Length: 463
Image 1 (cartoon, rainbow, N blue to C red):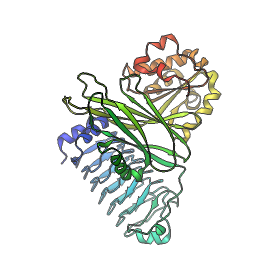
Image 2: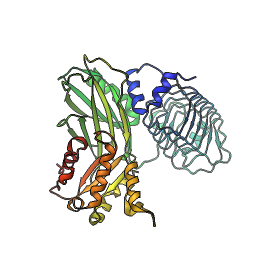
Image 3: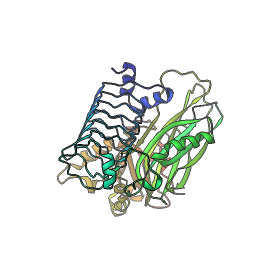
């Protein structure tokens, strides 16, 4: 049975749970036999957690870390585990139905005796996986790659693939035994590297003390090496947060990293780099503010990818404890996420220019709302606009003279700001994208919102 306290921490939300895990790195939480329906555990740190016997229905595990998790005898239905990491996890004797494992990582994962029904393994990586007595029922796998016949014979073991009707693209299946480099199966070509971002920094620092924040961009399989390198650079550094950006990045593409202290003006630092296909780090040096009574300093790292413009793809929040401060309770506030739903705000006179810009969103697999593309014939457009602003976590404001003079653009911005209700980090994240230079200043009626919602701060010319 699950530990009641551990379950309580999980149900408080991913942000709370991940912060607690950072404070208890050696603890192996017990969530065995829990039942969850339609719960969001996206980006949750579930590494090493005992989830045996769990029953999940409609649970969101996208980009969650389930390395070395105990998943024996689980019963999962309609679980979305897009991009999740199951390396070293044990699914023995489980039942998985209508689950989405697209782009997931299964390295040395145990699937022995598992029944898989109508699951999606598109672009999933399986290497060293125990497939003994796995039952692939019906038309279970979409886009499966079994590799060569030789590899197939070595890996299938007791697979029951009766009724299988998949094709030969997608999953990469490698055998369980070690091979030489020349014998390793070649993975299917992908449209780009799936890049992860790891942040390393000291757990604690004194007021006015400079600390080094290491931001590492790397492939998922390089995480362990990155950890070793980070500690070799700074022996006080520990992993503060990790996020799978979930966006294919081609070698040669530019990434921008923007680090700021939450609630502290004038602290933003920017680094830009070119992705070369392998791990690299960007270093930030930040002074811990000397604020009486402050127990933690919270940071926000935002990641942008350049296509036609700089497109925000996600953010990571983490904290560093202030040395000498006494803890007032359980830690809160550490989070990593990818933006999931964008609202496109623009003036109708700029429509053609904006349409050219939003092409990048499809490349990112970014869901978004744009009136001319998204409204259905006969739909009442005014309440639809309002609802989509309430649903979005990313508000893309295409800013120009036309936008400044548009009554509806200003209404949309005000509704987005009303959602934030003065909370700097509350959704949606407002990202202005200038359409003309020099950048048009915001109207006076929005000027007073500068401190809480960074309207003036973010609407700035490209450097």
